[in-house]
Length: 486
Image 1 (spheres, rainbow, N blue to C red):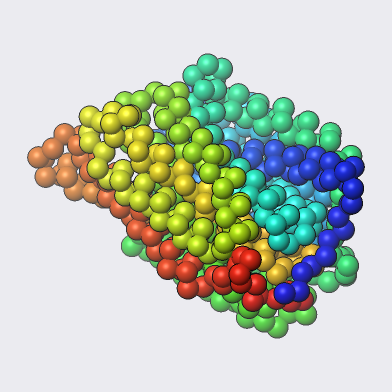
Image 2 (image 1 turned 60 degrees about the vertical axis):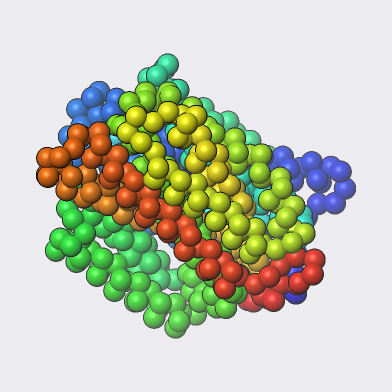
């Protein structure tokens, strides 16, 4: 195996500096992960305070996902070319400023626009942060340890976001969801230049791929927009089909452009790394199943069981706690055994927890019907960690930013699609039952949520054969067959 050498410091002092830098990057990553779902439980309150139309409330979530998922790949390549610390700080400043604007939002339209700006800032922060982590730690056990912690943060971010959103909404008010970002982001900005190392591609600033950037960003933005609107306008509506066709055409154009470009935005040669390609496929299905489950599960708790925002957040804390407990063993097993095995086991357990939730009744209780599925779903840490590791196997410093943006895009786009599809399935099932007039509203909603859980769970199970077939065996008894390419 050809291993990319990184400019690591040696000695105790260098080790301390690296982990100090990692801690700062992890805080920023956690903040962007939390923000994906922190507003979910606060949506009813936000809608009342800012006089949202019911059909427009989803845009508080969708506007963030739209720009976050759409610009991640471009953000990753910009980090490679312009400097990773520079892009991290620029994105963090934009994210922090947009968070302040969200907290002070005077109207629904202004809040939605600023949520989109938040997503753009996050799309600049995340790939830059992960590529800095990659270049601080050499491939193998050292990087696995760092990415193990990184994966645990990603796994717990969504569930902690729901908890934080519930607590802040209940005890402080919904604007404090965003004021929290301002405080954390401001401190991180003050420390970034002193703590973080700068790095970029050796040929940075010399060659760009503007046509590739336009086609792929346009395709991803249109795709996320189409799937976020599909539950409202219908999956077979002319507008939805036209947008999906436009996204597909732009993606085809992007592939053609990248195959011929002298300095492509996304070098297609990266997909010759089977572990990278397989990890991105699993990451997409992980996002589809896990984020869809959290979204639908939150609706079930609030609309069927009548949970408050705070109680809903506390219930989801079980997933985060399980993820933290399993993070250490996952990192060790990936190093000693195989990333593909840990990934497959983790996805099996996570999907099983989601499918278990299909048995939750209309008048369910936490310990009797929710705790088991939630604790089991906490095994998602065993997927986030090997996916993060596998997506960077064999990648050189030259392509660190774009590889980081690619895995983030896979998960975020998977999440957007999972939420849209699960919402559509749940709504269609509930409307059909209510139309027959043979059930109560709560029972109809519960049946719709069960159908959505089936979709999410089966998507998770589909990731198991993908992991076993596409990802090469890694560990002490089998070397990576993927090689550094550049």
